Amino acid sequence: MASDYISADMVEGSEFPFLAVRYKVHGVPHTVINEEHSIVGAQPEMEFAHAVLKAIGK
Amino acid sequence: MDFPTFSLDTSLLEKAKEPEPEVTYDLLILGGGPAAMSAAVYATRKMMNLAIITKDFGGQVRETSEIENWLGFQSINAKDLVDSFDEHVKSFDIPVSLGTATTQVNKEADTFKVRTDNGKIYSSRALILATGKRHRPLKVPGEKELVGRGVAYCATCDAPLFKDKKVVVAGGGNSAFTTAIDLLKVGAEVTLVNFSKGWRADAALQERVKQTDKVRLFDYHQVVTIEGKERVTAVVVKNREDEKEEKLDTDGIFVEIGLSPNNEPVKNLVKLNEHGEVIVDCSCRTSVEGLFGAGDVTAVPHKQIVIAAGEGAKAALSAYNYLINKSLL
Amino acid sequence: MEILKEKDREKLIEIFKKIDKDVKIVMFTQEMECPHCEMTRMMLEEVSGLSDKLSLEVHDFVAEAELAKKYGVDKIPATVLFGDRDYGIRFYGVPAGYEFNVLIQDIMDVGKRDPGLSKEVMSELAKVDRPVHLQVLISPT
Image (tube, rainbow over all chains, first blue to last red; front, side, top):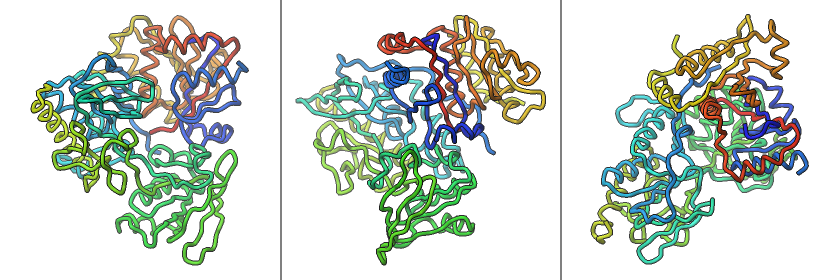
């Protein structure tokens, strides 16, 4: 909601195991940004914001 | 597959008001498990001005599923029990610093200063430490790097991810066997690796596990390293009898070798025993006046929910008496 | 069959009173409903009935493939939350356990048209100038 550019999917991993395999998920929560970058675990909001910016090269 | 039900957890939805750094509270409670929550109930009813600082509510109780020894219930679901504790505490409108851990506790004259990991400092005249315990790591190469990528500590949370996979479980007690059972339920191939000689788990659990043929048991073996680059691919174990090493191909390892007390904030302040637990007397007093301990973080001989709750109540009442006697209340 | 517990239903009615604006919940399932889709749909039907600010639309992933494609929905069950517009919030799979609370929180955030993030985080996110697709993988605990 914070940005019109950002969309977020909550994906229940055991129903869609191919995603857990594709993104090499071994612990949850596991957040994937733009199908490429990953953050493992629950992080403070600012960490997520920074990870998002890093993923788009900022 | 058994699905969890749709259940509301109000602590996740309604954010309680935050404590204020400018206020010197009568009592600060550090922690959010049964000891802390029980202390909160008792402290509120004594009309103390208090606040709670905790990462989350529930504590280790959240990692179990069914509880059969909480008085009044032949069997109760862990989540239902924690929810009921939660609701009771929430009914009092106590300020909570949620999602924060305490990093340091100091005492300046008669006031305790509590520093949290978000940089804030809170003050109080009395303090209850009820921070419980966390899982002990193996402290082997590869472990830290691969947490969340094959290295796990909580079967209730992560077992579903290892469906039909190969998993090593390090440990020989009840939690190792319970973890093995959780993993067998999702079709995993389990290898139990026990550092000491002889399996310590309850006979009933051992029986259940040994009955299946999907479990390999490595008694008196040490985990040497955890291998893998992006995720766990193997675990090297050493037979402690003949020193022979063996590499086990695996998709993950659950570390169930016991718990460490969360004593970091008071390590240099209060007397600890050889396990790092806070030494308390039967009034929950620690070696520092005005600082009380309750629950698993203390040296109380049995770590059980009902005992933690009892200790929490005692700690709150002791804190109250302390404040009254010192005319601080 | 009632999915939510009586006391949770009552609690939700109270909580939902804080919603100011309309929230549209759109769910994609299919005619040959698998158990997960059925569970999700039944839960959403109950939840949306607890406030007149909440509405539910159920669509068929197969029969209405165009619509699914428009919303970028590629798996079912899928739950999408709309406020004034599509915020890009999707739940894939059954939102149960912890996720159920996340769903309720998101409904509240959309209903208040406020994601509840700090000023500092909002200003960092304002720097985002191209599409960012987040996928949070969880397990049902």
